[in-house]
Length: 624
Ligand code: NFS
Ligand code: SF4
Image (cartoon, rainbow, N blue to C red; front, side, top):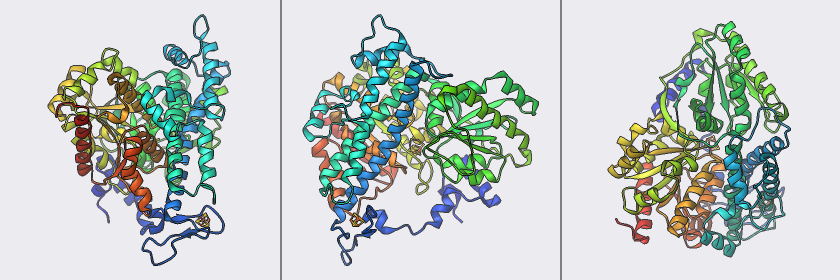
């Protein structure tokens, strides 16, 4: 059997994989093995089931059919598949953004409980930025107008999304010239589905350009709306200490894991868990209290804003239940494996689904309604508390002690730490103390030893004086490895180390959940504007060493379309088309000033990124 050390570098995961085996419970790694060998046509992207004349596949070796029934060759099929993947990812993040926007609008109209405008300053700044009058007006009036304005961004009434204006002028002009300026968030996604219907857009380059536009509608649209309005409603993050890994579960306590993505649910649950009546009930049942932990991006949202401990990233969701110490797993949507209800059946854990658009057979469904936010939050926490009575203490196995992590680096917090302007960071980059910055983002994927890609790449970058910005599951990986506390500055090269020590910050900054990758865009735009250049000229890069999800593809596409070269650690299913592969990994550089690279080995990816950053520095005339 496979050695658990080849499955994850994290000791909590390794120990729980052994538990899974001894209990005979199937995990994501077992199912990946059972799927071998995975379909070679699909791996290369040359299979199509877009219509009922198919399904079709193109023979990558040239001996069999080179066209589908409709006549589509490998280039069109690969481009169409990629386009649909981008649309699915972009739609996921943007629909999350819409959910936040709807709750924000309802809150502005006084129709919710448990929500309020927490960051009035940010509301006012955002409104002013978008030309909404703020003087002599109430918070409510401004919020209503802001909600209206952003609702328009989802539809077809605008020629360009509101936040496109935030990108540097040369980038906006480039997007206009290429015809990829995003017009409406829903519109670009719908248009992608239209274009990839049989017999519509049969030009792979044209499809891919629209793929960039679709992704930009996420990065500078739906996701950015999610981030900005979450900050306004739940607070803009500022540096906070917390803990991470499965050791955050506490043996004598009611443990409730909040898993999924949208902070609008988890935020009211945090409020409900402080309800003295529920805490008393937990004590009555013999527990010491109620312990909330996060998983995946909901966990990141709570960690960033409230310092809630983080139980783990993507591949930890099944293992968290196997600790036998989890009373409830509360889920909303995205990245929640259907298998969690199967694992929960072997324990006393209640899985509670909350989003009407994401139902899980085997879960208890508590339909979320922001009009009764607090009440529903209490109902959910109470179900977790009652489940404590069913816990079997003999089956409780919590591996490891938690590790410390510092989170909360919003752009506002970073600029605040620098004295309100990007100047000190720009100077540190300009004189070479910091060589550049890299966003290490994205998922876990069982095809890669869990966390190895994130932790190794990040380590090599900081050792070489490159500041690392992390989000999503990449952030959790680095946290578990102890690379996200101020003391981790000692792991960094001398220039980065000195800067971090002077500011009291880690060399790896937690910027939030995956929708919060938009914070990285905003920071990149601020640096570019400060220097009077485009983002593509900056010594920056992106990396998704262990990506798995469609959302990650949309993120990669908008990061590249924004001018930041991105390295993937897992092959995207495009290699069956030399034309598409060539465009993405080389030709795109001449079009948007950035491209994709694929490198599975994080040691080699680090070298590739360092070379790229030094190249950008040289082009700007910065010291070697
Ligand atoms: Ni991002 Fe968050 Fe994690 Fe990947 Fe999933 S949790 S939105 S998609 S797996 S980083
Ligand atoms: Fe086959 Fe063309 Fe239909 Fe795709 S769209 S399934 S390639 S006939």
